[in-house]
Length: 309
Image (cartoon, rainbow, N blue to C red):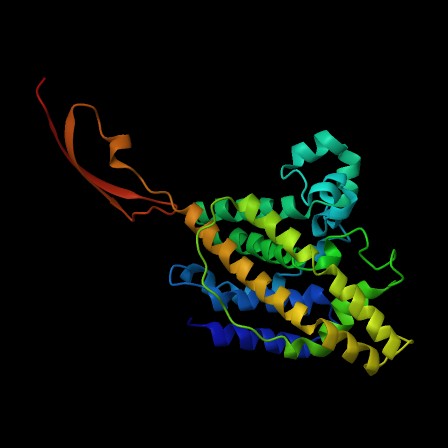
């Protein structure tokens, strides 16, 4: 796609100017800008957004210090839900979860899937009314939440390895290792298509990515054996070698999921107008509407002739 190389160059320039960056910038920026590798010809509107998304995909992290409601949007502790332990799933609507478990419990476990869906719906609304400035902001939020949904330590009660003697793995894996090895995270794009039910799509990838949790924890165990200080090159090279396939897979799937969700936001923002819906009763019409499908504004010409009854 055009502008792809330019967008990737902007991302690389940003990464070279920053140090000690966590998944919160390096990973999120990579996932955002490489979503473009899966764009199709209908997604031209988003091509000009990619530099913004690369720079602002970590804005939700920045908001956490000022907005107490932001933090729970970045995770969901799936394995604290009894239903997940028993059936491998949880209720997909927030109201259903609250009804079954109570609002305090649900808040403590995090709102990640519903934050993702809210960002998606807000993006659709912006696209419908042609509000590109706010659309970019919600697309950046969507990018962030999609990336968090592809990071297993954001999906578990054992988010820092505190229950498996892996204390501190979150920072070591998400920040230090990604900093060191981000240039080895290479992948391409894949075909995207229409999603029938967005909610199902989001929950499906959450459940799939949860399964990668053990790989990260086992990688930490092996790396700690190589370097008990867990601070030197031996630790991080071992952790990377153990987890690199999983890490690249999660990044690749996150970029693809973001591209697919952006595409489906675009599809849902298009409002086809049926001439039968606005044709006056008893009249033959020559009704021409443009553009069709309609985005935010439509124009039409209408020639009519009354029919006798």
